[in-house]
Image 1 (spheres, one colour):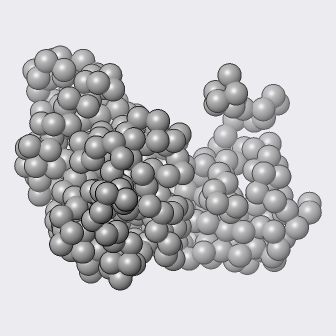
Image 2 (image 1 turned 45 degrees about the vertical axis):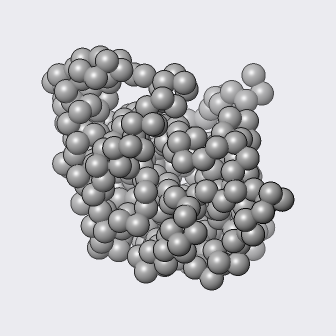
Length: 355
């Protein structure tokens, strides 16, 4: 039970302002209606028309040949690495990447790959960094097979990789014969923030996935995209990992609704994040990182409080934030309105004043 999620503390009021994560979003009434109307079949048998529609649309959106619907983004990463790599191969990724920090050690436990942690500001590295990481091709070194990036970079502050930098690191990888993979959990935040189409953002990446359970507001699922051969081989790993979802069209319909209605509105989340950052900077002792997208990281040590204490105080006031990398993280999403931002700033100011 030590790994089970914590339940809300006794006596805590209902959360009225949830800045913990964009995974906290709830399906809208219109999304629920789309789910109720969904035509379904057996996804594992290949006859769920709504899943096919979602996968076809995602492949087109990403400029890839094929796509596969999966329960979670973590499963997308695991399956992609299992498909691209063999045991003992090496993956090049940033030292703060999700595959290193937030997937339960699964790549050591299940994929058998070695991950080389790359340094660099805001969750990114450069083409020169990749060149410096190239190993000699001898029996003493692990075969390097895959370069992985995270767009946006979560622990990097929700930072957007510039397109030129994305392409430059991918070019080095391809020169070496490596595959490239993009963890696109918040990819559409990056596309909206940078004003770049998804297919252009991911053109140099052999595989990419998009999470629908974060800012896009769906209750379940992520879609992994690549060429037909890659997705064909990935299906075996989906089977081995128990990833069949049967009448999955009911959830795929929520993702389709999100594609139609929840992408352009991500700009509202970005505006709310900037407003939150501005307000937090007015609180004495608080150091705030300027957000690129919908994640606001801030340090409260100068205000005389640690992350856990602030979280506990806010929980008892109906406000939820998270802690990550020694900082407080506040995440804006479709269930957070502009008035809630003002109220959250006031509650954080009050909680810190007690220090």
